Image 1 (cartoon, rainbow over the protein chains, first blue to last red):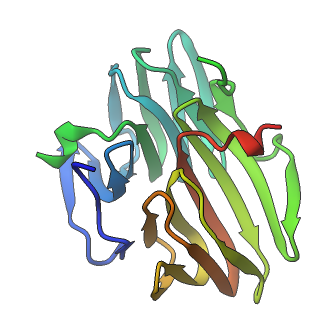
Image 2 (image 1 turned 180 degrees about the vertical axis):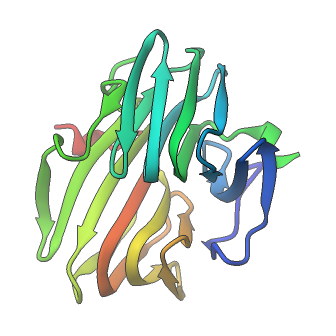
Length: 113
Length: 113
């Protein structure tokens, strides 16, 4: 295993970094094959359309998001999620401020550097 | 890809199944390499110690849990998580009713059958 987080991570202790206007990301548990990131959005913040070879699930912890996968958009709220296959364009617009949990496989090595 | 969920999953629509006393599991997004399950615990419910070859991250959405990984136990609350390396014993005791998000890599094929 090349990368591996601590066994216990506490939200109050892990740093948050600004990644785009109105969007902050906190890295949580991971190893080479998976990664959890907690992403906080202000209302109207936009996670711009992009794609990557990693599989992804985005779970709505709170707030409301218009989430696009490929050419389909759905409004997601707490308890809903989107599954993004590898190399498929996706993005999100935050309608009401909230939190997405982004889960990747394999880990986003670019988030570790 | 052998297994792949829908692109959008709504918490109100996906079935919950009872897995142990006081514990219900709802399967959310997945493909072969990853899986998200939302697990609801009543107070005092126990996720018995077990292990599996899958990597896992358990994120506390709500409630309070005493979570054990190997021979170390920590009290986790909303926003905290545990990372469980492959083949390491782990378990949880629910102190205050709540929800764990269990993330696996690869997918738990036993949850799909």
